[in-house]
Image (cartoon, rainbow, N blue to C red; front, side):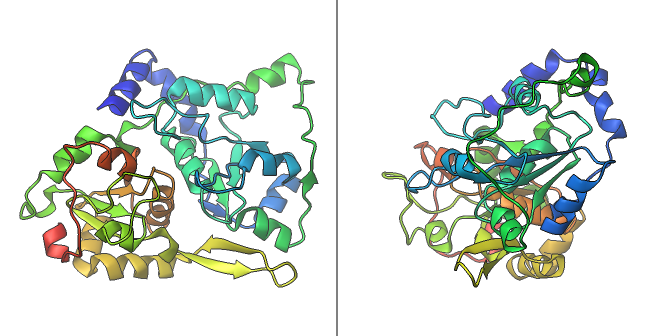
Amino acid sequence: MQTLRRARSLLSAVPVHFARSYTSTMAKAPFLVSPHELSSLVASSSASVKILDASWFMPNSPRNAETEFGAKRIPKAQFFDLDKVASPHELGLKHMMPSNHQFKEACDKWQIGNDDHVVIYDTQGVFSSPRALFTFRAFNHDRSSILNGGLPAWEAQNYPVELGPIPEPVQALGESELATKTYKLPEMDPSVIKDYEQIAANCRLDPQTSLSAELVLDARSKGRWTGADPEPRPSLSSGHMPHSISLPFNQLVQTHTVPETGTTYTTLRGPEELKKSFQAILGDEELEAVLSGQRKLVNSCGSGMTAAINWLCLQIIGCNSAIYDESWTGYASRPESIILKGERSLEERV
């Protein structure tokens, strides 16, 4: 329970009344904003908006997110390196949830105040930005959204971009204004993050124990889930854990092509389509149990990145869920883990 212990130890040093005080006046922002809505927010004198580029690519990709940010970005955006604003992990895993202090330091660097509306995007449309949004929401910063369609959708609708080099951070803030942009020490909600011990205990529950087991929605491809296809990480077994259901994240997004350039990007499907996708996987009875809070859900993927896409889609249809932070890479790396292969019926899985 390393992640949970770390969160609890950090929280123990923070007076609860102080850590929670800043959230009480913060109005929730929508999970998604369109390019037009972001442009309007930026133009509004009444809105304090901070824009973050949280692009991230798979380790075997030739693309470099920070280099691309240095070449082109939404004006006034700052770069959120998900692998650097993260806690160390015993297995060397990347982009694990940051500690309270790491998150505060990052927000101070970005000059984000507790009441700022944070809008996050990535360069693939909807891929890594939900993970950054999950981070802000886990720290109770509910004034946070993602740009649906990311930088490609922004450009496709002819909104301006800023080309490199990156401007120097603004240093001309007065003392009183700077004080308002110092992030108060946040409190992470430990219930939204699952560690290995919690997942392993869930895997050991009898399938016949009705609603006591948490369902794990796995965002990897179906072939990796069944074990038919290999994992991209060498020597790591594919397959799935008990009480797991395959729901590849790409079933929840739609792909668009920009005719002039041939550029493709993704956006999330609409709420009704999302609900139908979950209904097709879970069935009416399980979906009702999920929406009513009787059945708890945990999202997993390869390394905890695309699990946040499934998490976000569940939030949009009104369901709170958690993320198994280290996901399949952490789970399958441990020899004591129970790994199943092949297709299984819903009854066998739950």
